[in-house]
Amino acid sequence: MHLRLVTALAAAALLAALGCGGPPPARKLIAVITPSHDNPFFKAEADTAAARAAELGYGVSLNSHDDDAHKQDQLIDVAIANRAAAIILDNAGADASVAAVRKARAAGIPVFLIDREINATGIAVSQIVSNNYQGAVLGAQEFVRLMGEKGNYIELVGRESDTNAAIRTRGYHDVLDKYDSMKLIGRQSANWSQTEAYQKIETMIQANRNIQGVIAGNDTMALGAAAALKNAGMEKVIVAGFDGSPDAIASIRSGGIKATVLQPAAAIARLAVDQAHRYLTTGSTGAPEKQSVDCELVTPANADQYGLFGKR
Image (cartoon, rainbow, N blue to C red; front, side):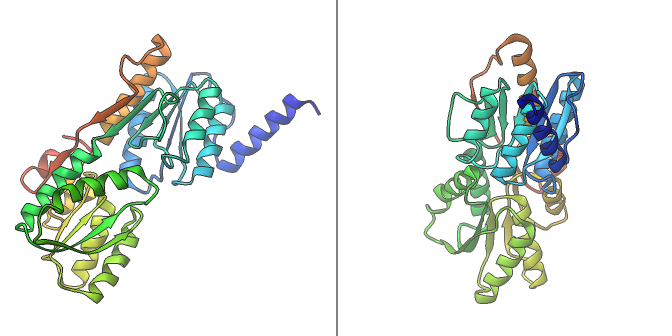
């Protein structure tokens, strides 16, 4: 059997195994690859990127790597097999994703990273992220204000392998650690998960109910914490999150969690597709590789101004 036929069959088998569509479309294809769409943040960025690419006349493939670097590698292989014109990627790890981005580049496919950076430069065309540190400082300042600058608090941290988790916790503590009267009495990773956050808070408050606040690295964890606290009759505990998800903003409006920091996910995804289009048509994005977009604080005072990860 000829090598070319073997390669074609292998690519077809990989496409089928991953549930991805068959032969490349007649139009140029943009492959959009993100973490799980079960998380509204990732769904919003994926849907926005896909919609913008379609507006610009591209075919679109939409897939999730579920924060699994091996699955991400397979999806990059699929994009290469489908002869994608560009890849929009919210990656599965700052270190684990470097080889996948390099592989796409070697295949002549430009990669535009959104939301999460990788620990390398010069292989992705763009790395467009929210200013997580600036946002974390905003969120921590509001948390301190809500707590009256004193009290015991718990921190819920995101996935340890995620660069954003580390940046957010650093931003939080660069503010919180200045206040001797703010006492960190528990810190757990809930891996960005609402269910895991619920379980972690439930366990921690069984050991110590003397807490006044919970600050979480994202909104799904904040909502899980708020649900556990409500179930324990501790609704007065201050809960703050990060992302600006519709569920979190609805909770703020109804008196649940007290604040979140909105990442402009939709705007970043749209910007990445626009830069991909510009690069494909002119050979340049006209922007530096590393780009940062500021976050915004959402509270009961301004929650009605915000919709799907952006202002209405």
